[in-house]
Length: 115
Image 1 (cartoon, helix red, strand yellow):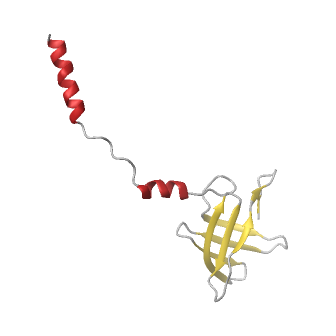
Image 2 (tube, rainbow, N blue to C red):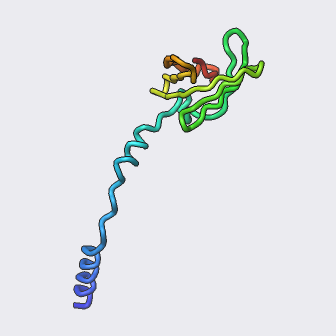
């Protein structure tokens, strides 16, 4: 009889326990919106870029959607960026009338990131 009373008490307590809250819509949207780069990592960070003509510059891609590019001669370019898919990275310079330019990105067989 004591066992039945104990089970009844547990059942009553379980019925009174509040349900876990479902994630909010914004939390779900943020998770869905998180995009990875071609290498599977985050698209932001500091990158050393070497163009096909040998010019080298550093790009600081920030999580807030802005970027700064610094050329070897010290020239600085700024703008905003958007990772539309794992293989499509788009930038817009902070210049009057600038249009968004998208770059297809891949990782080649040697592990080199190309765009």
